[in-house]
Image (cartoon, rainbow, N blue to C red; front, side):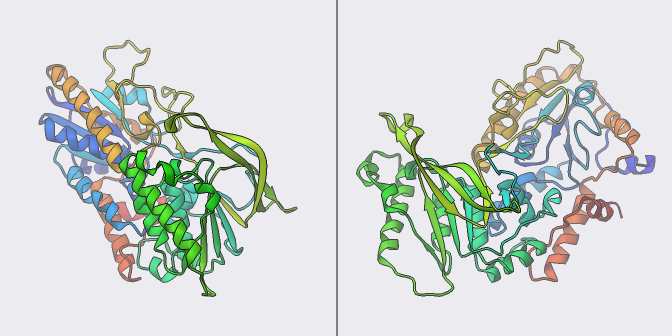
Length: 474
C-alpha cells in the first residue's frame, strides 16, 4: 500500500482536538445504523467503519434472499451515511489480522464492535460431516455470492431435501429450492447457483422442527410466500395441529394470524388434490429433533433419524420440548442445518460468553483494563445480543448503543486527542494490505450492475475478493 494511495483515501484526517474519533468494526446493519445515529447527533465526530470484506452491507448483501429486493432498499440509507463528510469506509481490513483491538483503542476515543455472527451452530450428532449435509449459512452465502462460499459443493440430483429448523432462513432455503428457475433468473442470485438450481431434481422438501406449530420462528410473510409458490403443494400433518385451534383465541395477535394461516393451509391441503406431474411438495413436520444423519457407504447423506418429541408444562410460554421415546426416519438426498448463527472471537482481547456473545451492559463492554488512555469499548448487533431478530430489531439495538456513545463522547469531547485512522493506516501499511475505500466500492458496485444488465438481472456479484480489489483499485 503506497503512501500516495494513503494520501488519497477519502476522509483521511489528522488528529484534531475536540473531534471525537470513533471506529466501528463491521459494515453491516448494526454498524451503519450506529453511524447513522452518531452523525445525526454529533457534529464534531469522525467515524471510520472497518470491514474485513472489500464491500459493505454485511447480511443485507449476503444474507437477504435474492427474491426479496425490497428488504435490500435499506442499502440506500446506508449509502447516504457512508457519503456523510464525517464518515469513512475502509474495506479489506480485518480485525485481529491487520490491526488489533488494543491498537484501535489506543487511537480511537470509542470502538464499536458490530461484526455480527460469522459461523453456524452445529448439532454435534453422528454423520454431521457427511457429504451433502449443508450449513444454511454456507448455502445462503453460496447463492448470494459470499466469497468464502463461492466453491460450495452441493448435489441436487436427488429428489428429496430436508431442512432442519423452522426460522425465516429455513424458509428462504425451501423457497429458493422450490421456486421456478425462470423466476430466479430475474433476481441477483449468482450465475453459479442458477446453473446448479436449473438442474435440480428436488421434488419434495421436509421442513423439520423440534417443537410445534405454536412455536415456529418464521414470520407470516415468509410462510405466505411459500404457500403461494407456483406448482408447489404444501402438505401438513394433521396430527401436529391437535388442540391448536382450541387455544387460538388466547394467542397474541401476530402469533394468532400466523397460526390461522397454517390451519387454513392445512384444511386446503386436505381438500385439493394435485394432478400436475411437475408439482413439488413442501412438507412441514413438527415435534421432531435430529438424532443422527444416515449416510451411505461412500459417506453421502441418505436420511435423518429423528427423535419424536412432545411439549410438557402448564403455561404456553413455559412449555419444554422433550423426547417421548419414539423415533422416525426421513429419507433424503441433501440435508440443510438451519439452527442459527454464532459469533466468533477474532482478536485475543475479545472473550465471548458460553452463549457466544460479548458480555455487555446495554452495549457497554466492561473489561478488566484500567488504562485511561484506551478508548471505550462498545458492542452492537448480533455480537452483543445473539443472532436474534430481523433488521428492525438490530436497528433498535444499534440506535440504543449509539445514544450511549453520544452521551459519553460529548462528556469527554474536550479531552479528545486521538489520531484515528491516520495512525491505524500506518499499522495496516506494515502488513502490505490493500485498503478499499468508498470510491473503490462504488467501482465494484457499478461493475456488478453492468454485468447484471447484460444478463437481464439487477446485478451480477463479484464473488472473489481478488477480483473485487482489482476492480476497486484500478
